[in-house]
Image 1 (cartoon, rainbow, N blue to C red):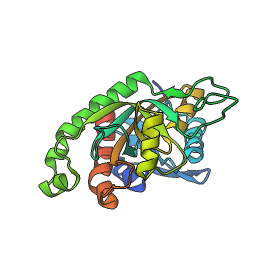
Image 2: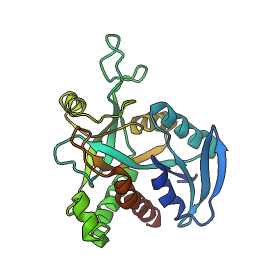
Image 3: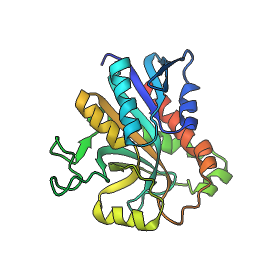
Length: 250
């Protein structure tokens, strides 16, 4: 496919890991966002932070498509695990996306996006399948290279790659009551975050390929005890860099 590939990160540390792989990046500011244009393993790449929340994410996605002409978007970030067995240090590769806070009832069924007649939007099948393979490879190799202290601190002895439904909303889910309510309402949801479904809707509108991988940083509940800055620095950002580099090197 022609056109650049967008690499979108949710957090500065993850974007830094991607920029470190690009030998010739140049900054360009559009809509108050800094976009980094360059190359990675011969691919024309635009790297950017998504912004937090669905509106910021939709603006970023639209700018990538309209201003830079990207043909595919790969998003890396962190998320809270919801489904049983989706643990800290695992990754979730999204197959489908849903806005858990979309509610135009009684005019529309809860979660259905008005004007679309649907509640879920799909990731690009082929790009996502490639992302799954790469993520599984990284999970097999990278944690084994880390000191026992890191593996023990975050329980990274057998991290897994999950595929399925990723849900998004403009609310940071961090209590057991909230996460349990989401599990009851959306039992197929693997993880929760704040941007993926917005990217999916924009990519659906423009017919742009989207693939999203999220590292599980917590269980979105009252008992989360992970040292998040350390987790981001020593686990999530390393996952992101390794996954992006391997994806574009194949």
